[in-house]
Image 1 (cartoon, rainbow, N blue to C red):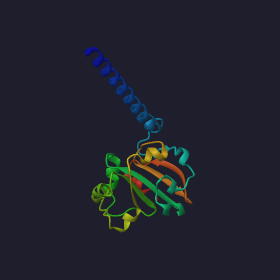
Image 2: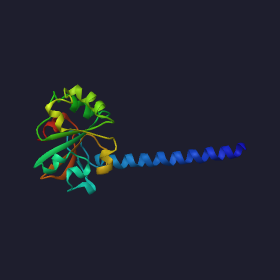
Image 3: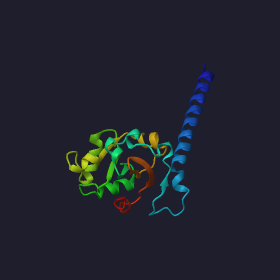
Image 4: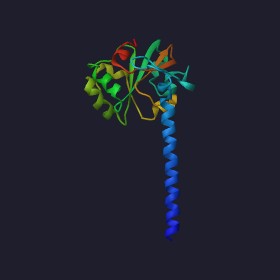
Length: 174
């Protein structure tokens, strides 16, 4: 009996290790784009949009108003990201024109709790350009999980993506 339990335990541990190694490989694949570029500090790093390239923003979970935008950026930010926190704290209650924020959070309350550090509240005029998205949104639609990530939209189509590692880069988008 004890031997059977031992074999079951070994099998469970082997499956768990296999799953963890798969998750680690996926994480390395996601950040590969950052490590392939030498001296990326302070520079934009292009990110491949994959199958989302050329699609309308609403097809990848963005606000339908962006489908008619001549020029706009959607910047994905996560509370767990140091650069994202710095960007949010620099907002001073507003978002630059032409920029939308996609906040990765489990709820609007959680997102605005964090955004309040930058002076943004749910009833502020800038809140109209805030999207609250689940944590799987970036990877699901673009195949990567990198924040802060700026997606550029021209004439209602997704045309390019790049990392935005500093506040200066964020405000230079427009």
